Image (cartoon, rainbow, N blue to C red):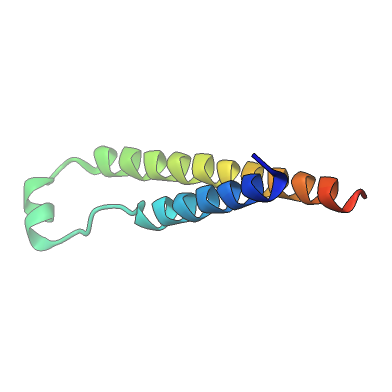
Length: 79
């Protein structure tokens, strides 16, 4: 696998991670949701914390992939 193939693979990984990041969102609080979840305020807060942790984890994976691309480009250009 050449360096350019590795860069392309990392870019596809970044694209898929960004798509996953866009899909992480809390449930819509519709009228039905409010009626079925009366008195479970803590559960909603816990879910938001889980979403935040998932976003942070994916964000760190994106940063790691971007750093790997930078190091591969440095190998190409010999900086």
